[in-house]
Figure (cartoon, rainbow, N blue to C red):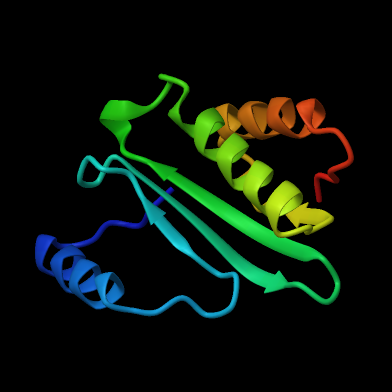
Length: 115
């Protein structure tokens, strides 16, 4: 759940992050449609094979399968291509749709570990 932001704050953030180089395996992925979806990976530790991720879907685009698709892409890439072994996800306890989506995604993974 993103915290309220001014349009100017969003614009400055977008300008700043658009030119940043990724740090290691930490990435920010944006959907082609402005403000509809963002996926981030963070805390990537290739030595220990662990990482975390976050997904943000704009309200108008929720419940259309985009989050599940984004999770599948991130997990597939980090587990199968980069050889990570464990993922950790933090979700607000009141965010039932995200809990359900993440549980389904994690249970469908083979050889992965939901943190």
